[in-house]
Length: 459
Ligand SMILES: [Zn+2]
Image (tube, rainbow, N blue to C red):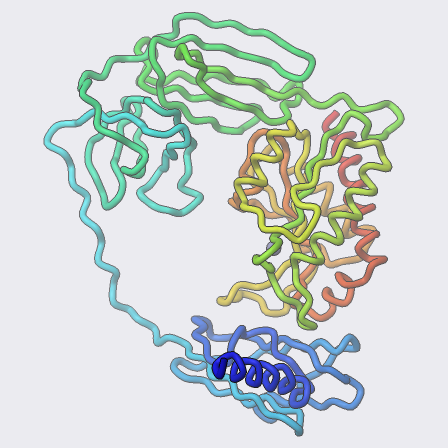
């Protein structure tokens, strides 16, 4: 009883305190005692009544934008840095620690070569092959199916080094493998080959005597490289799929009797009236629920802006006759791989993820602003280019380019995928646009135009 009364009183006092005291709010750094490993960082936030406010950081006057937002860059010395932020009524002190440069080399793990190779098999359908024993997402080569036999040459930390073919090697996390009693490695043979077509797909089927590892390269069409192949030079067989007619994503999988299925999507049939009647598009508002994404100078959350823009985009696409799927319609949590699964379950022709940008702690350019569009596979590059061009042309945001990046939601090869960073929510100039409903509407219309231009271009 006493305790709950105490909690109530304390809660009541705490609820009152901030609004009485502070005329300004710091959004970043996230707390007043942080470690940032960089020679520069920035303060962003907002003031409550901007016309009468004068804000100082270490006695330097901070410019305040007309929305009340501010952004201020500071230098960091090694060790402790103190910043006094004051509006002449209240003062907040921030301590930022910059770690001292440490030149001691990181001890390297030992690579151990086995006396003789051993045979293992994969224990999952999503066993990742990597080109180096590293977690880096750029090291991904592809996934292989469950119960594929692999020849292990040695180990390095959590990884096995495997030999795929005469001159081809890869790495795999040990947790994706299991011991197998069958220690004989036989070569893979192609038993038969068939080709067929449906309205939406080209289907290639290679019947093999066993499951064999493969990887797929996108390069003017697709190269499916099969390893451990008996009748081919260096033990590798490259199956090439032409870029004419334009492929629109692919799916590769084994069916139950060791038959490798390669399904290549055809370009979706568009209507001659320029509308998007036969096009299925998944829109993905970034973040959601507990995951706020970035926070703007004025305290608004990225997840909310992403959803507002996405809903406007949905309406515009529907007006053009497109079939639209949206990964979240409300403020809910949703995992990255769930978003990819959702896209593929709906057999989407295109995928667009909507985000608002921030900067990493170790920032390269604190004054960054503008629109960026990300893609991963070469198939999606032209899509990214058209979306960016259209947004920049119509909304006059700064052109911050298209970039290849290994984000999970766009690392999906089943359809062209882009991730749009509409603007920098932590840059007061971009922020003013992002919170404006007319601007959001303009972005939505521009993306529709970009989709149309892209489809016309590839057709
Ligand atoms: Zn984001």
